Length: 107
Image (cartoon, rainbow, N blue to C red; front, side, top):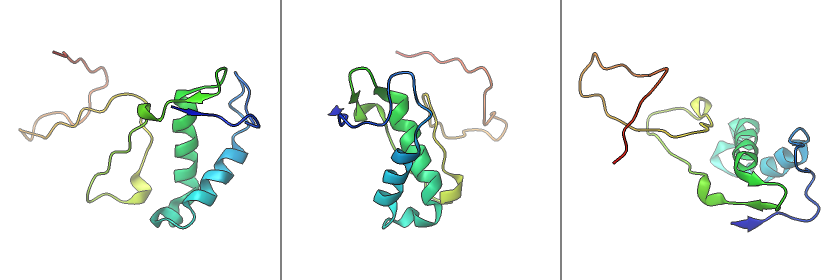
């Protein structure tokens, strides 16, 4: 968990003014390998943080955000998934790749 600066540009209930945060993320990502997709990654980073941020307490729990890398994909294919991803290998070619209404049992 990390505190949010007192000069935070957002107030509870106001998640529309994200451009200053995106610009900050762009600056941070500018020297990284994601430079060609910088805007997309900056927007995903800000969206991920705002998804778990407690704006009233000015707190962000970064433990709730995970980056999952997949080999063979392109940077342009990257996406933010809000939820749970179950990475299951295909044991049969007729298994569905996506479920619209998934069900899972946790033990």
